[in-house]
Image 1 (cartoon, rainbow, N blue to C red):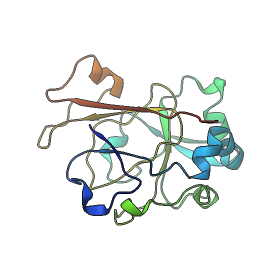
Image 2 (image 1 turned 135 degrees about the vertical axis):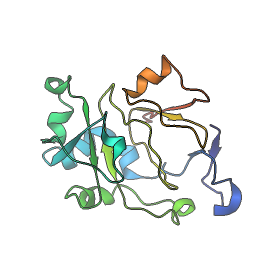
Image 3 (image 1 turned 90 degrees about the vertical axis):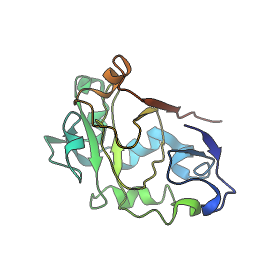
Amino acid sequence: VPAIYGRHMQPGNFDRTRPVRLQGLTEAWPMRKTGFASLQQQVGDKHFRLRQCMTLHEYGYAGPAESRMTFQDYFSEASEGITGVIFENDFHESLPAMFHGFKVPDLLADVRGKPLFSAGRRNTGIGFHRHNESWLAQVEGRKAWLLLPEGSERPPARPPWRYLLQRPEGLQVCASRWRARS
């Protein structure tokens, strides 16, 4: 998946029907500059719904929650074996607290949809799913997108990293890593 520097682009300057990695749109976000420690300070004591990785893709919305836990507890060493992800919609109490840390880039302002906040630990992820045009800004950590050609059948549900060991036909892998700057 090609990476394009999008800071000075106009909305019609790239093919929005295909996956693309846009860079340079979030560099000025306070959340990007302060990082994970600041986010933990802002929302660490807030309770979030935990959703199962293996079944989250089955819903056209955030899906049922198996439990609730604080952001701080979710990322503590005591929670290493957790297999769920935090996946919240725009009605969650923490989102207004985070809004001062980001602004929707002008290039993506016409992408419709409700804001979501998701966070996952190492070896968590959501199975193959489809949705309309969307965008994701990664604040910290690593993320891999596994993409299949249009019209492909959904592979059997399993932890996403397992698809790298037994690749479905046509699989594309797009990886990114968030880096701190001084």
